[in-house]
Length: 112
Image (cartoon, rainbow, N blue to C red; front, side, top):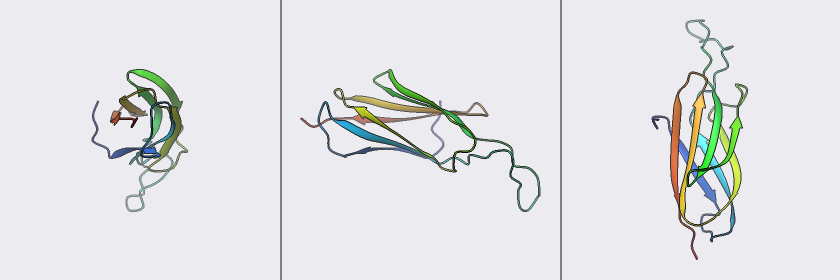
């Protein structure tokens, strides 16, 4: 798994305690091409390249997974809410239709 694409995990609120529910937003730079668009200069069809699966894991345990379709916008944001159960590691993994797999990790450190 590589992390060549730019992605970001944001938590809100930024400061939280063990047991709090936080909003987790995963933002990724991805073209989300449907395979139906044309290059304006060459007039050739742009091949399909879109995210089709997103998985959220906390300390190795799956929180949720999503099936995504090509109609999602360019540079999508995926948002979930999760309960903080101690410090740990949040891992978001996505796969696109070409088989590329990317992973982003964020350490979770509740205060108090």
